Figure 1 (cartoon, rainbow over the protein chains, first blue to last red):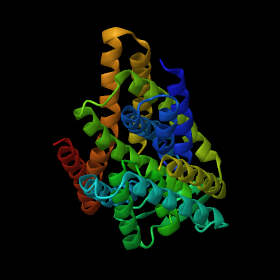
Figure 2: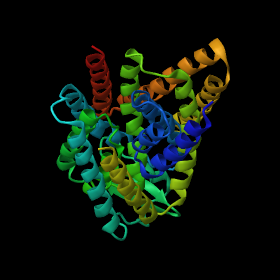
Figure 3: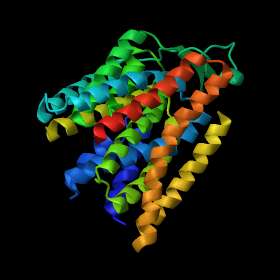
Length: 271
Length: 84
């Protein structure tokens, strides 16, 4: 077992689960820096995201944080965009795409970090029985300490357009796009940041699974390294989900904003 | 959702054990464990979407059940196109 790969997977997957970013955007460049060939690093990034998503899933479901209807609906737009982007790859240079992604991550981080306070406020008439998502709608209730907070996804058309765009850019650049999806869900669609992060952690698992199928068919998986990264990502994903459940929404938003700025710097350096 | 939560808890444990075996066991047993764990972590999120679609269909939430099945079709089509 490569202990460096294992440790990197633990740390990046934990960061990914707290902020709903997916750890691949941090793990892949770190793996390359520590000697893994770039061609082998990309599938390992997707393994870490898929494993971290599975590990974080149970705890995030326990807290009623995942809105599956919202996640699956927005993932339709993101996946369609990603397929179009993958088919159109080659139309834009890799450097240009990375710089665009860096600009998106930086602006999302700065914009989210500047906002103060909590947009969705607790309501006294709600109880534990109300926690969860609503049937037939993109809304729900989540528990925040001893209170219960209702939310409703707003500006769906703008959100759908952004998800399509994020998928398109992600497909072109070969990224999972979590660092675009979470701020789009939180800041544009006005979904609480903890729900947005948990829902994105669920959807990037789907994106990664689809990507891994392709890499497997292309024979690009280093199985021993995949197993090492998977073991680390499960520990990190579980730890990140535990940490997320203890942080307040402003703390998660600050963490997310800081991580997005780091992602922007990493992408700019890679470009 | 409690059923799904339990399934995901078990899935995480199974994946970790498989991954540890794949990383630590030498030779063919390690390789088989690694193949199995990769197949497993690919299957889990897709089966989660499938089970949500079935669950919503039973609840009478046809619109979102259709969205879930549509997403699986998009993922399948995308994987197929990318593999060709």
